Length: 170
Picture 1 (cartoon, helix red, strand yellow):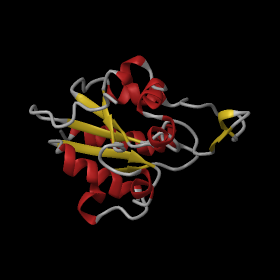
Picture 2 (cartoon, rainbow, N blue to C red; picture 1 turned 45 degrees about the horizontal axis):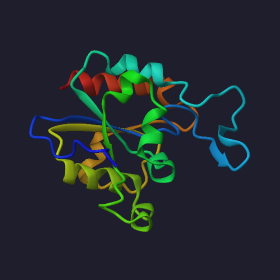
Picture 3 (cartoon, rainbow, N blue to C red; picture 1 turned 90 degrees about the vertical axis):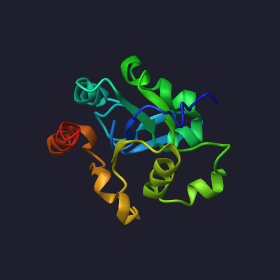
Picture 4 (cartoon, rainbow, N blue to C red; picture 1 turned 45 degrees about the vertical axis):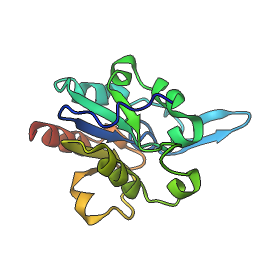
């Protein structure tokens, strides 16, 4: 899997990005017959990607690491292809790596621990995470989390403000 330009020598600025509850409503399910779908009426998968593109546009050096369970379940390339071409070009990897962590071990880590483990391995110069899951984040990296609400994700103006504030501080 070529999902890593891992341990780059240049300064690395990373946004860890979840999908469910961030780029679309959190009520996402997968079934054999229905595929991946949202059960919330009126919602669509990845409907808030244009918001993410707009927020990141002024920062061309910012990279994305996928911190979504979609990578573990469906694979890195599949998950990456769900993004717009502009966002895909920013993706440098994912928090889940088959060669680094067994699925069982990864699944038993909190999202915060998964991201913080990747931060330790990848060593970005600057980083933040956008996620709706704030359970069991280590204290040393909690300040890097921009927490979204399950049903609002990136459509929440407060979240957009928080992202702009973090980006402007770099």
